Image 1 (tube, rainbow, N blue to C red):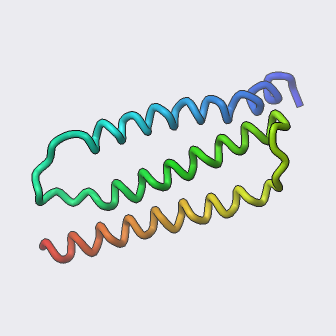
Image 2 (image 1 turned 180 degrees about the horizontal axis):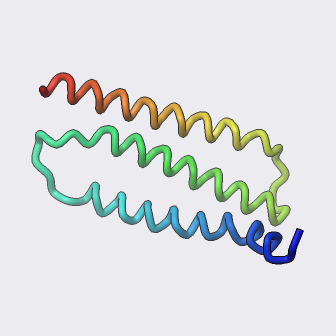
Image 3 (image 1 turned 90 degrees about the horizontal axis):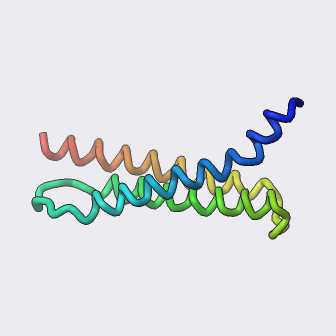
Length: 102
């Protein structure tokens, strides 16, 4: 491998974590905006929970990469499974809400 690809693989999780922090700030701003009672925000809360799980996964990846903790890498699969299940549930609840409203 070239040195560039090794360097990119080293700093990639850190950049992902920075972008996730920006997304969390945007979610917090979205939740703090006053809204009408008829706005359905539950799927966005589920996506926010999935984003928080992704943040935990990235933090564990960075800590594992720097040998701060020693946990098996297959733990990431459980995080990803939870995120996918949460996304699917958010889509299904939104579909159910749209079906009830129209």
